[in-house]
Length: 506
Ligand SMILES: Cc1cc2nc3c(=O)[nH]c(=O)nc-3n(C[C@H](O)[C@H](O)[C@H](O)COP(=O)(O)OP(=O)(O)OC[C@H]3O[C@@H](n4cnc5c(N)ncnc54)[C@H](O)[C@@H]3O)c2cc1C
Ligand SMILES: *[C@@H]1O[C@H](CO)[C@@H](O)[C@H](O)[C@H]1NC(C)=O
Ligand SMILES: *[C@@H]1O[C@H](CO)[C@@H](O)[C@H](O)[C@H]1NC(C)=O
Ligand SMILES: *[C@@H]1O[C@H](CO)[C@@H](O)[C@H](O)[C@H]1NC(C)=O
Image 1 (cartoon, rainbow, N blue to C red):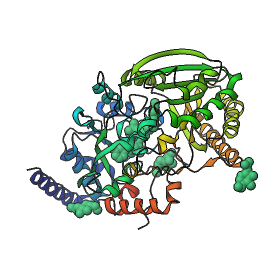
Image 2 (cartoon, rainbow, N blue to C red):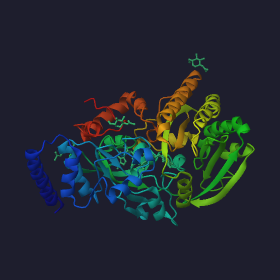
Image 3 (spheres, rainbow, N blue to C red):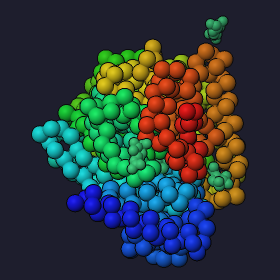
Image 4 (cartoon, rainbow, N blue to C red):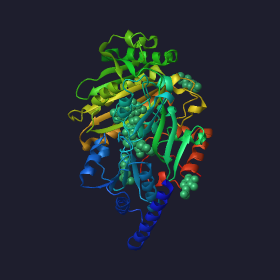
């Protein structure tokens, strides 16, 4: 039945294409593609100036993403719709972008001028199969939709801290979560993916069916196909986390840095703890240091977290929160409607390097951008330990494209982030963050502590997240094999403008 429908659909498109080919040249013109899509999927395409277009534009987190003017947004209702969309885009050669939750801050990733945006927002079903400890999620769902379903259950899931982040982009970039110490990257918990390939073929990829190539999809971004659905493992833990929000004084910064590296060193002893520390705040005030510490139970009693409590601190808030409640707090702290820019670095767990980088943030970058005098500008240096149990979670079954499973020691993931309003500040902000991160890497290199990993979910357009994978011959040949199998014509390289591409060498 489904096949017959598809056949009729394809025959129809072919007929439409033939008609179009006679009247207009099919050179990938996006508006023509949009018109055919509207014919194919009536009511699912929104054009500039319409209310639907505006509400999709408003659904992006960063205005520098939302302000781009696509030719149209198409919102497939299910994977069969998506299949038709992809089939047409493949045959017309149109450029396109894929959007799940729209939280990427890198222009051209989930929105793009004059091209087709495939908006997955309607693929947002969440079905929990508690007996099997899995959940089936449409990739257009937001994490809060998943947390909502888990409310009151005795399960957790590795998902984004902020609830409005999309399942799709987050998972395909790796996914850091408060459960990273227990289950690794969120993408390690992928049991199955439904993938729509460039020619419209729908595949289900899991550990039995094509396990070799599943690896490349975990952390490989949008280089292989559109992921329409993910089956994810639940975490056997209470859905509630014990969370402490802490603040420190800037004069204690050295002690806090020492606490971070000490924790990271000890973390294997208690994988249920999680830490993120941020230095920054409003740029017209002096920076502050805040930390969010969490644990399945007894955050104040965890030995590995003790270093953070040993430093003189102010306990802002301490309570047991469900993932939904916690994700709401993060959403409140990260409102949409601003220009956003971020850039990332990874270093070894080296105290001296981290001290130097934090000092450079506090004494160079923060005042430099503060001098722009933009009201309400905020920024921060986010420091997240990539602990040993996080990186080494699982075995080959959890193999992923982040390529860090053989790291001999823990790492520190850094992200420098700015939020502001004036587009005139764009180039200065971008350049300043790039200079800062280059300096951070150079300084870490002087201390033998630099690392090549660039986290896809935090990378800026001028960074290349797959560099260290490319240097790992074994991993890279698997990636190339996956590319050859799933996207042999490199449609996801040639017809998308996003900067994070796996080079297709075959
Ligand atoms: C407030 C906030 C909190 C965050 N918290 C965390 C966190 O706790 N942990 C963490 O690891 N990261 C976090 N991030 C980073 C986040 O993971 C990335 O920004 C991620 O790209 C967002 O996914 P999205 O679906 O919302 O974004 P989108 O902008 O929709 O997509 C991002 C990229 O993924 C591609 N893509 C999306 N869906 C698909 C799909 N189904 N198939 C193929 N390609 C697809 C898009 O084309 C685009 O290139 C956070 C970001 C923000 C803004
Ligand atoms: C986005 O793509 C356009 C068109 O290809 C390009 O001019 C622009 O520089 C890109 N922006 C970024 C941030 O890469
Ligand atoms: C870094 O490593 C090199 C080579 O192993 C060594 O010569 C140098 O002393 C090291 N530098 C530091 C700061 O540890
Ligand atoms: C679609 O592409 C896949 C991956 O290259 C290929 O295996 C499949 O045969 C193609 N299907 C059609 C109908 O061309």
